[in-house]
Amino acid sequence: MSDKIATTAKPVFFTDIVGLRIYLALWVAVGHGLQLSGFLERSNPLFSLLLRGHDAVILFMIVSGFVITNLLIVKQESYSRYIVRRFFRLYPAFVLACVAGYLLIDDWYFIVQNVPWQSAAWSSYSRGIGELQAQATTNLPPHMIAHALMIHGAIPNEVLSRSAMTLLPAAWSISLEWQFYLVAPLVIAAFGSRWRMSLIAVASLILLILYRKSLLGSYDSEAVLVANTHFFLIGIASRLAYDHLSTFKASPLIGALLSVFLAVALTKAVLPIAIWGAFLCYSLWHREAPVTGHMFRWLTQSRPAQILGEASYSLYLVHRPVQVALAATCMTFIQVNQWTMLAIQMAAIGIALPISVVIYFTVERWGIRMGQKIAARIPDSRAPARAFPPPVAIEG
Image (cartoon, rainbow, N blue to C red; front, side, top):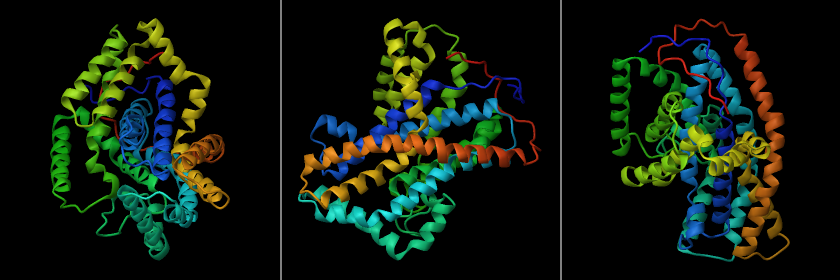
């Protein structure tokens, strides 16, 4: 296998992945709306599916592995330039959302204490919000420092209680993303060396065993990278194999069905792996299916899907502050029940969507430009990249 990546590869932009992101962000937002409406018991099959927002986050991890691998393949740059640009891609919207989350934590606690519905599941949910409110009120400085460094997800509860979730619960996955960004170039480069691959595999296995044995502490939402390495690796492997698989002509529908079957038979994370497998098959071979392939392109590559997909990061971050703010405001004027609250929550998502688009075109794009400017000033003294053969450009 080649020790160098050619620098002549054309940039490859996977528009269908951009479109996929908005559906994942909406999945998370709807699930959170159901939670705040008290629909926590999973007796309703549809609600049960929508409440599985963690599966959407797993898909975000896989997508991140895919996208960052693609970035490192087609954009040859030093680690310092890479990490500066990644930092500014995440940070501005992240800080804005954390501030909003902190300002609304008292309102969130007010909501969960004053709604008329009660159950054992709701009591647990309410108690969790109370813990976050207590941490934000009485232990704010260390949480601010941890979030400022985006390492809050990697801090065990024994060191800083509820570190991953305080200020903004959704931010636990942003810390996880940042942890992946820090090590991704090293992991991907290891694919060009057997001994490096072996070393990383052994180290990851040891850390995973220590984590599973609770020897590394306890974490909210498995927000530490070692607990989720396998999901990022699925994304990495998918991108590395993509160019070779794209040379085949296959039915995406048959591939999707096979992916679902393998996910059910071989994995514990059945739903996200099955969805990713089906999505990847259509990404590769959608032109081989006149009807379903056209539907796939419309759902993921249409102009609305692309605009909302670009804004999905902001939607993921700000939907919950908007949901809390609207619910708290409405509760001062009307008596709510579960269905009224659910309507409020869905309306909040409708409000959050244009807000997210505005944040993308202002805050996020500003951060992207700033990262590019600062990275351009850093001397590019990279060593030759070691990884895999150069990719081919993919149409569409």
